[in-house]
Length: 285
Image (cartoon, rainbow, N blue to C red):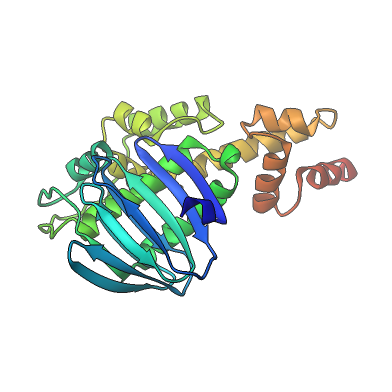
């Protein structure tokens, strides 16, 4: 079936492989994988109108997948499904090690596995998958920090929602201490291109990854990735004041992969491309 895919994009971050696969053909097709120790697969449908017939031994079940419908399955089981209509899925392949860490970080009752589901609608996972699609379209521009931040959010949500019932645990305001906040910001600034993982920073702060992400946001008002983007843009605006500095050099100094990446992000957040923004400075002077 892979030869029929119209889109086959992929990224990897700390034990989680992320893909987007699209097939527009309408004839009957099928997917089949042998049992393995690869962990779990989460699929999130990005459009309406897909259906498949899943075969499990002598049993078969039919499922419809509209936009936001998901499936979760373990690679430890042999899988075969007849594909009846076109599909567009964001897929997360979660290793046993990544899932085990999410289980260890989970508040409440300890669970050991994920439930197998098919055709269940989940708006939270749809929104998180949608946030991943620009990175899948431009993998050279995607930062490790951003990809891992989203993958941690998705695995934590999977464990909370599909990993069994949890006991009620009082939730308090989660804030970083001053030393933790300073350490995290220092580590982020030292890797202004985003080539640092949530795991590295959380470990340095002696916190779980999911706790760190929430605590950083509650402390600063930003997720780690958005805070770093704000720092990069602030630095870029300062450099743009030097009217003789080439835009490509500004992009490199601020951790962007190239000038086009810099222009895209700067325009999105500032309302104008960096060249236009710089010309306005020149006119103002």
